[in-house]
Amino acid sequence: MIYLLGGTGFVGGAYQQFFQKQGLAFRNLSRRQFDYTNRDALTQLLREQKPEFLINCAGYTGKPNVDACEWHKAECLFGNAVLPGIVRDACAAADIPWGHISSGCIYTGAAGFTEDNEPNFTFRQNNCSFYSGSKALGEEVLAGAAQCYIWRIRIPFDNLDHPRNYLTKVMQYDRLLDARNSLSELHECVRAMWQCWAKRVPFGIYNVTQPGSVTTREVVELIKESGVCRKEFKFFASEEEFMRLAAKTPRSNCVLDTGKLTRAGIPLTEVHDAIRRALRDWKSSP
Image (tube, rainbow, N blue to C red; front, side, top):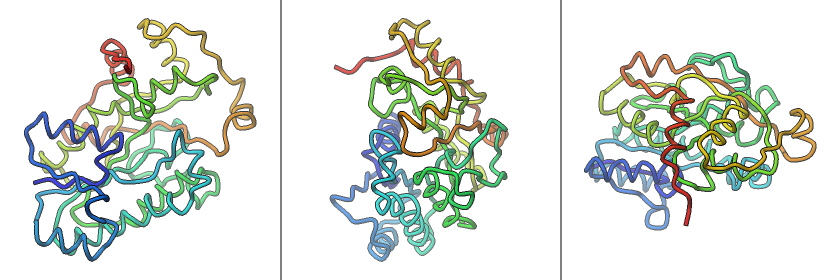
């Protein structure tokens, strides 16, 4: 039995689909049914039920984007920094291996950051969004945790029209900021994260993004090439204009190195090819 926290979110929902397709027994531990933010209660449950593995997809991202975190700082800090510590303590006490969904948004720049590079888009540099700062604190809380994977994903997308899908966002925004980023194809990355446990690769931090990187303008060209959307896309002249006219907080734009995951025997599709595949199989919302 696998326990899933945050199973109703964008990533958590993909995990549920994956487990169902694979015929794997799992329990989506909903907060409506059980308060897993209670450390003692979660510890007792894990000791009694002894799941094989636990995956924490719970967190606070803000809707429709990270700007919302600037107005809900307490919820954001609890979901992204405090809750991971609660789960860590409960899993350690019950001797349960587990994985935590983190974010590559703790970096900025196109250097190709590895898992060993110090995050540079955090509260400690005083240059980040509250969301990115809280995710970086969450990783600090988990530093040195035993039997724990920390999976960093970036800007998830797939082939289904959805408000949380990056491709949907690109097609819906009035104007776009051109930037270079790593991206995560949702379902392929969920499978890759699970394979870390299934293959028993060493615990630790893994960048779980498609190899390579892509600019916003390249994504737009792929969308137009696919025929999914033929609108006239407009761009901000600069990041300064974007911040002045459209954003409340700085954005992380970064490229992550995926060599560690590849060396572990878990290769992913190159980012441009993954986007083409998603657009080829695009399904619009009803």
